[in-house]
Length: 145
Image (cartoon, rainbow, N blue to C red; front, side):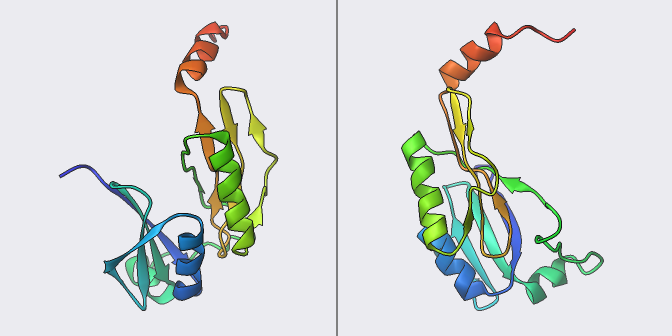
């Protein structure tokens, strides 16, 4: 079995969050979903679990759920095959109710990234990277002492 990553996110409204994640390109795995949570697949090995606050709290009862309007909990960076695909996902996120470009777009030539927040304030950094160009750029930079 390959190693897999399941990112668990607390959401205020599971159905609304599920619709948002579907709009930006995730696929709902019905086998792992119910009215308290949706398993949203990004790839064969990466899924985001959208959990009601009640269900999320049952896993982490000793910590409060982060108020994402005041604190940053993490940035989930999603890779795409092109700059155009990065632009497209941000456009889809905004059309689905997101705050798009919460940070300035980041363009290093070999790497291009933008940002958006989901409906619950979780931060995303979709990006495209030309790995060969990135390695060439990094090898050309002076090394820190």
